[in-house]
Image 1 (cartoon, protein in one colour):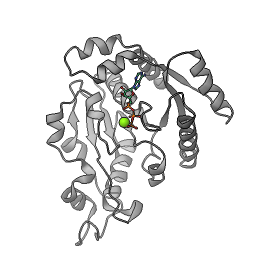
Image 2 (cartoon, protein in one colour; image 1 turned 180 degrees about the vertical axis):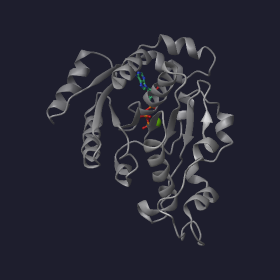
Image 3 (tube, rainbow, N blue to C red; image 1 turned 30 degrees about the horizontal axis):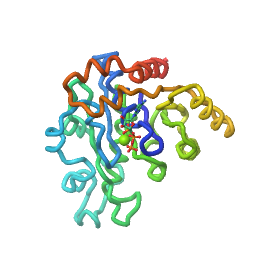
Length: 264
Ligand SMILES: Nc1ncnc2c1ncn2[C@@H]1O[C@H](COP(=O)(O)OP(=O)(O)OP(=O)(O)O)[C@@H](O)[C@H]1O
Ligand SMILES: [Mg+2]
């Protein structure tokens, strides 16, 4: 299962990505599960229970200028003026750079792609695309990628190799509009499976609101995750007592149901 989690800012992409990655690993401990943080705000590690000290020690892949130059460069030149290999060899990067979470999920932090006026042809973005293509096409196991909010970055061609997109919507017109734009872009990129997931849904009326707004655009709501006060409490806690609360969360249980439906 290789999915990208997309949607407007604050809808719950990081919560869903981290929880789904953990639940996939729990359901099959033998499986390689990779969680990729492709959002420049880089907070997926919290959801995965990785401690901040560990994260502080690493440089996000796309911000590691010597690494980028080493992998992408085929000649001289500075980072801005590099003669690039557009199809670099990224074999071994996951083994070298992934951080293992307490549950055994392997976390890759991509960091910010600064394009320095070169758009999608910049070295860091070339590395990002090559790594994602490798992870999605070659790696055996599951991959969940927590994307940056919105849709501007989707044109860079970073997610066209995923099996599917989880498009997270919260009950608001703004969120629905962003998700519909993302859906159109994903279709243009040729992504076959598009799953609309409503999140933070407090009641039937909110679910109906999302269903009917999507159906006005000939789209269908596939799954609903409830609003859950537990999640708010979890986000204010350290790892202490975290697991009990996590297990009792109705939103986590709903994501487990989502996982099993996606698998089938
Ligand atoms: N089902 C839910 N019930 C209650 N709170 C939730 C739920 N899902 C997410 N949240 C809370 O909503 C907030 C935003 O969630 P999250 O950070 O996952 O969103 P995001 O889409 O990744 O945001 P960003 O676009 O900033 O990266 C967090 O405080 C999170 O704990
Ligand atoms: Mg996020």
